[in-house]
Image 1 (tube, rainbow, N blue to C red):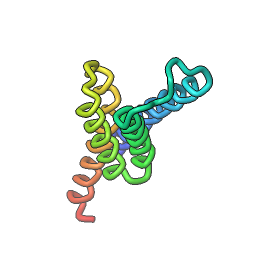
Image 2 (image 1 turned 180 degrees about the vertical axis):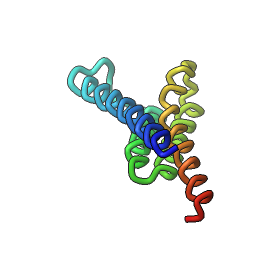
Image 3 (image 1 turned 90 degrees about the vertical axis):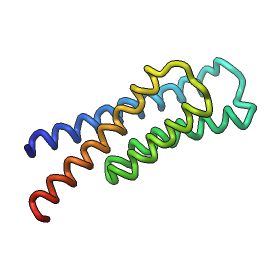
Image 4 (image 1 turned 45 degrees about the vertical axis):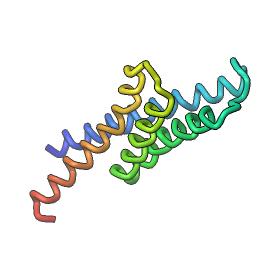
Length: 117
């Protein structure tokens, strides 16, 4: 069971790094070669902040699984509602690491409770 839990945690971490890395690459590419004008409305800036906090939550989840995952998923949920994005496949892909972090946290908590620690 321990190997399974370790593998599960590293899958969540790897996918979180993949999401964060993709976000960083998009930001760098946009800064290097802008495809549009700078964000001009509060809605656009809010979307940027929410996506940034989504990715930051995934990094925080390396140390604090539950709080980091909750920050990531709550930010992503707010982004989805606020921006009314129609591509839910992208949203689901961004949510998978946070969901896995919560599942990993629950599995570890369950194991600790079962062992009496």
